[in-house]
Image 1 (cartoon, rainbow, N blue to C red):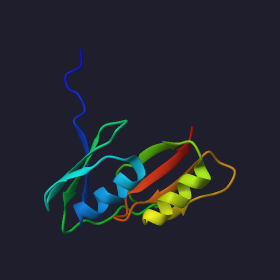
Image 2 (cartoon, rainbow, N blue to C red):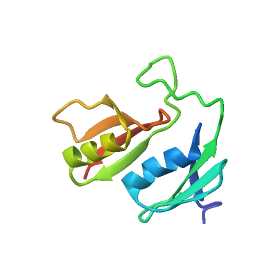
Image 3 (cartoon, rainbow, N blue to C red):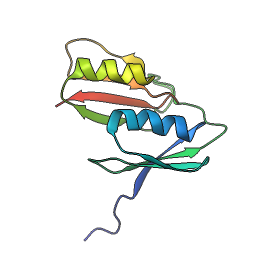
Image 4 (cartoon, helix red, strand yellow):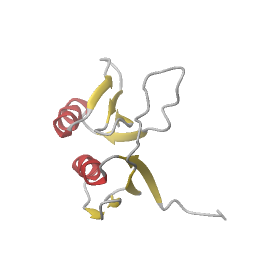
Amino acid sequence: MPLATLGAIVLDCPDPHALAAFYAGLLGGTPEGDDTWIDLKTPAGPTLAFQRAPGHVPPAWPNPDASQQFHLDLTVEDLDESEKHALSLGAKPLDTAPNRTWRVYADPAGHPFCLCAC
């Protein structure tokens, strides 16, 4: 029997409302909270939460001398269409080499995430 269950994945960021809106655009769900903490209960997965961190410094990726801290793998059906949608929401390409089943982006606060073809 496990000791705990996963309650939420929490991302530090300078603007919780903006980052929650970005991920709601990718994953669905309705952001709820205040100016310091927003929960996004995703329809098909765990809750993502966004915590205001005024001194947030985004991870440097790729950088072999620094930690990426974490990244999210988001499974999609159509990689090209999903990329267009993510970019329209404000994602920035980090590694989008062709002929692979995954591509790496940064969200508006600089956290890396991957779109992975199923």
